[in-house]
Length: 289
Image 1 (cartoon, rainbow, N blue to C red):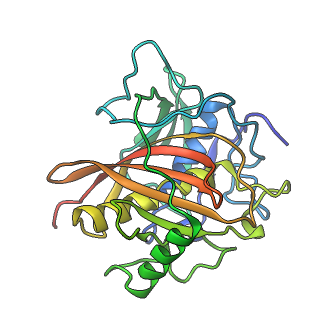
Image 2: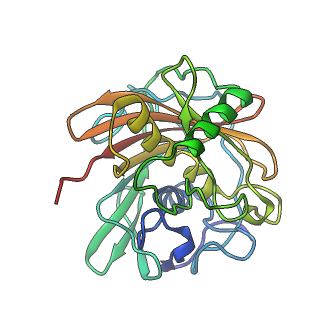
């Protein structure tokens, strides 16, 4: 299998939740980004979501880009568009266990709709020059993850990305803690074979998922934000295939802070420090009821 999926709808199963009844944002972002870049969403053994199947395609070649500050509408780099970069904006929660519809946009993007309501939309993105912090070592990320598990945040939920009770075959286990002596959060994790494609790779949309939850941890641990913040936008670029069964490091850092929102940089690397994906996210703290 390969190429574009011709699915018109997708039903995200409850096991792929972020908050209860709400689809994991990183997964949703990866599904939409895959349609923009020409990759296929899905491809996990046993099927990730109904209506989206396939296997990851070739990653873009060339120099590794690094994300800079993201403007409200797009990353601006004069005269250069980073190949393969996509921005996904979330307008409303995407429900689990409910069929929602794909819609292509005139700008070359892809959207998810619930009837006439826009849930999320993806467009090709432009990257601005910037520098990433050094990748935390496997040892540093392991210690940070153990610190998270020893004192998890209040209100912690059974998220596919960072839930404490997930196994390596049922979730990503992105348990990010602060790296000692640095303004960075990180986790060491190893995806299990049940999350992989028949080729033994982490599916495209789950690589995007690895760029999501670390941003929440960065807001909490580096900027004093509550655990209930939500992803409003996620921009990412995948750099190389990611195998399952091998150690990975996800990490994040603060870029901007405002009263009800903040921006983070985020990245995924191998245990040896090779970058696999880079991203930037806007997180928003919901207003009190």
